[in-house]
Image (cartoon, rainbow, N blue to C red; front, side, top):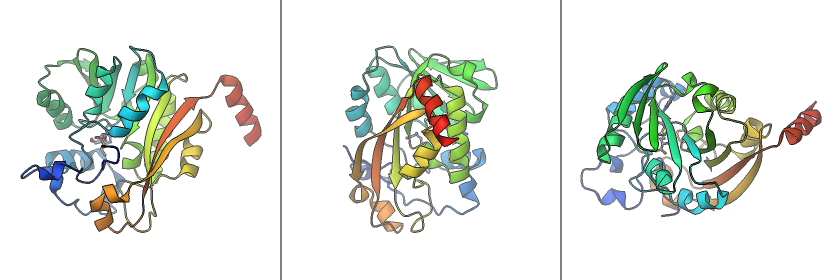
Length: 265
Ligand SMILES: C[S@@+](CC[C@H](N)C(=O)[O-])C[C@H]1O[C@@H](n2cnc3c(N)ncnc32)[C@H](O)[C@@H]1O
């Protein structure tokens, strides 16, 4: 399903009786929007997972193969939740490393897929590993570059857009500081009038993506879709239009990056 919802009940899933996914999204107060770890722990504790899809993201299926990555590429999935996309990526012969702060999410992910992970300490984090799939349990902001030296690609779905603006800037800076400069990124964002609805999901417009990432990547819009009809709960929260964009962030060569710096100085 190409236009599946990220933060609303996905089409098809609402048919599951008593599913937590058919609940209305709760009211997110301004305070909650600081998106502290406690905020996310409470979401997992209460099963309020409006973003979670019980299927593979259709955009991932469509666009990942166009990136032309070699088999065995290590793919980093920040703020991964328990997305099924992790499994799909391993089915494409990629190695995967996610990071997720919630122990409930990580435990549920492995249990729901009948996987028995080996759990070891990994600095300030825990490393849960089953075959080619690893989830680091802990805070994204505790990751360092030495933890991710082998990463060749990043898949950002419902991660950047889960964060309010100040935290997005911090997130993007940290991401750039921990993933190797050669790693490309597939990024999915929403654009809508932020005045009409408070996030999450937050609107992240093309100007902001350029401000966050143009120093490091050539930014290509692979596709933009009108997505409001696929997100009925966001319509109920006040939106009448919303678009979804799939971005390919291609690493700049060092010469391109230097040329960009000279232009801005
Ligand atoms: C909106 S959900 C998206 C999950 C996943 N990307 C998906 O598409 O299903 C955001 C996730 O980020 C996790 N998270 C939030 N802050 C984090 C942090 N600082 N470090 C690691 N995970 C974090 C939350 O627990 C939550 O599972």
